[in-house]
Amino acid sequence: NSIDAYQQTLDTRWSGTAAKTQIFRDVQYGAPMLYAEWTSPGPRELVVTSQIKTVDRANVPTDSANADLPVNAPDVRKFLAPTKHIPTDGIVLTTAQEATQGARGSVEQARAIYDWVVDNSFRDPKVKGCGRGDIKGMLETGNLGGKCADINSLFVGLCRAVGIPARENFGIRVGPSQHFKSLGKIGDVTGAQHCRAEFYAHGLGWVPVDPADVRKVVLEEKLELNDPAVQKVREQLFGTWEMNWVEFNNARDFILNPVSAISPINFLMYPRAEINGVPRDELDAKSFVYQIESKEITA
Image (cartoon, rainbow, N blue to C red; front, side, top):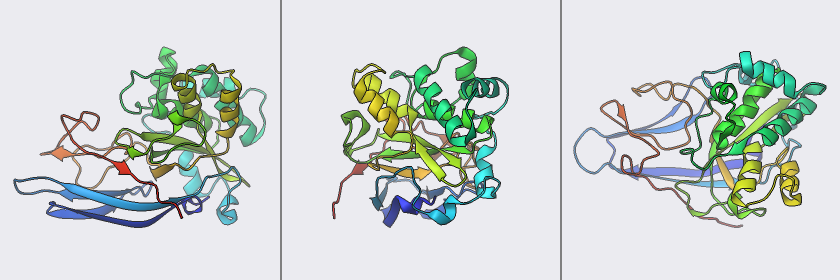
């Protein structure tokens, strides 16, 4: 189903000291990105402001036209393909086969994978940013700890390995949660990046899930996995998204833009900067300074 069913960009504008600005979209995923270039000394500043309308997303697609796309449609099949960080053979395949043993149909198989990931992974607060999503390394070492890009990438890779199209959706939390404080953020959201996941089922379209947030609740709310409150959110996060979050793109292991010196990149969820072809560390405030703020506007 189309992103327009749950998220609409009403306005985007930018200003600053850049000599050149341009909107790019990558060829494979169509991920939008604003490129800015400074060619002379002086302050390098860029301010981007977007007004975005969101609606909580349920498991029944509102866009019935796209819900009926067959799995062999090109814009669905590309989310079956392996990438550098999301292989679909070897230990990923054998793990997916074990997790889905006895399950029939894409929804039942996806639920089995979702439950396997929730039961076997854990949120590791020591991981920088949102993690790397290197699922082969996670499975080979047996260390299934990480953050959202790790845990949700694991779900995506296991789905793809058994023939279920799946993808990560990279974005940022921009509002408080109605469920748990740890699942929301407003005001200074500079460090509130979060990725979610979807799988595709013919007749349903793209179904939203978020096993990583189940594990976030367990850790940050100091609850056990079998706690009734966790069990409730576990059910909710297979088939729904609370849209106090804004999606940026679903691109993975892709070419950043035609002029970037560093390509391909793992994913685009943080602002990026390069000086003379050398990237700044987007997770190090001393290396690359930026701030992201959110404000809720109610109708």
